[in-house]
Length: 212
Image 1 (cartoon, helix red, strand yellow):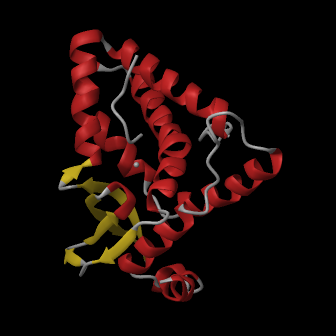
Image 2 (cartoon, one colour; image 1 turned 30 degrees about the vertical axis):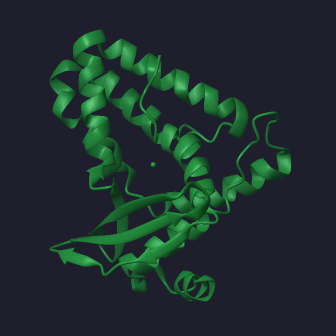
């Protein structure tokens, strides 16, 4: 697997298939240093993560990924709120999903399936087995072609779209508590992550339900 991933990573981006990119994504995520519960990351670890995050950012279509959760709710939001929520959601992906996803893949048995192409979209399946936890998870990486390369715009976990899940969560919070509360919850979750992992924000796979 390591050799296959290395061979794919040195190929020009325009020559990398969605399967190649999925393998690279999983490999690079595992290089992210996650802070332990009792300490913050060192300056060296922060510098290393900054370079790794830049690599990961190149694989993701953040415009589509952040648009999906807010698109059905725009009538209930001001333009400023839409922009703020998109920015916070992107920052949450980088500060929360990157470190947690990397630790999840480490030590897991990965079985790649056959990619399925529909128009400009290609879905790449991956079955994961974590023996220590007797855990089985099925992922589908959703890639879209833009120009000469593919970028990730959604991820399905056991057939549940991450974008759709947050679309539903955002809608529920906006309806029951208001847009300001959604912004507050996103900020709170981001603040907690940044205290441990450092401020890798978009101004410079959230993978858990939003809490107050």
